[in-house]
Length: 111
Image (cartoon, rainbow, N blue to C red; front, side):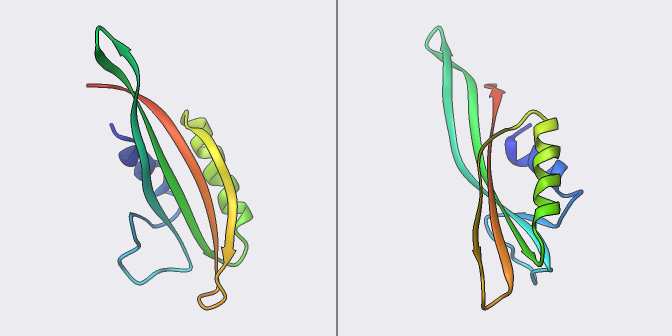
């Protein structure tokens, strides 16, 4: 399983989700996943053994974002993800969305 597959499986239970850009008409609450890095971080016998994958989770919400972002963080921590950053980005005056980012990473055995 990849990090994007795992995040889609977990987060689609909370909010509508897409990768890269939300291509449909945006609802009042949604998530966009942006892959940030895939690195080989452990080698054995000159072959990669472990992949470290990192994704930015952008949460867009009209209204209060605190309850949903707390739920997302708790679900991902329970699933073994590492949080590398959480931050409020901006309130978009033209759309009314609050934009909040959560950066996560996870180790996977290289196949």
